[in-house]
Length: 212
Ligand SMILES: NC(=O)c1ccc[n+]([C@@H]2O[C@H](COP(=O)([O-])OP(=O)(O)OC[C@H]3O[C@@H](n4cnc5c(N)ncnc54)[C@H](OP(=O)(O)O)[C@@H]3O)[C@@H](O)[C@H]2O)c1
Image (cartoon, rainbow, N blue to C red; front, side):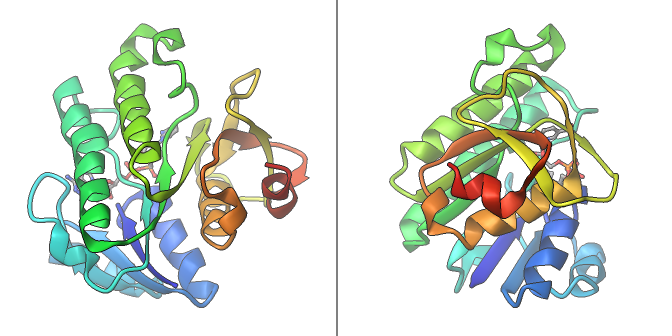
């Protein structure tokens, strides 16, 4: 599958690029600067330039599926969150609709389903994720919304716990297992239309997704 990873120079995006390429997919890694191209190539992807706040559409040339792993990051203010996590995500959804790129897997966040239930300093972020997820799910695209708990850089172990639409408790999960879950979603049409939270847990990823 020809997959565009948005946020391919990010921590999760790099892992997903590597995992997709290792699984035989043709990965286009969207980056904002040529300086980041080697990071994509080293992981088996083809770098393409695109900016969620700038020129975007050419990065989607000849793409069959999109995996959104971008984010403005925790250090930025609410304005950047709106520009990247919400408006940038919506712009990418619009390009998919214009180009008839049907498949879209969104890396969202735990608690994005209930943004007002989150800590006050997180609410603008959760509201941005909530809105982007809703717009994606209403877009007519073949969407899957993946909402992980706190991301860690621990090694992945391929085991998760899933809550549909939400888990009863929060928890953490290695980025490697989030990437592996996104890869497994891309390879499983049965996950189209699903929205779920995930943290580390006892169930192999494939088995957890088959229970959706
Ligand atoms: N941290 C957590 O605990 C947590 C929990 C749940 C969900 N999430 C979500 O998981 C996702 C991935 O997190 P992460 O920590 O792996 O991300 P990250 O390392 O912060 O990477 C984010 C990537 O987004 C890119 N980006 C930012 N603005 C962009 C723009 N305008 N156009 C294109 N790309 C842009 C960045 O590009 P540059 O490399 O050029 O800066 C970076 O590569 C995010 O959506 C985050 O909100 C995080």
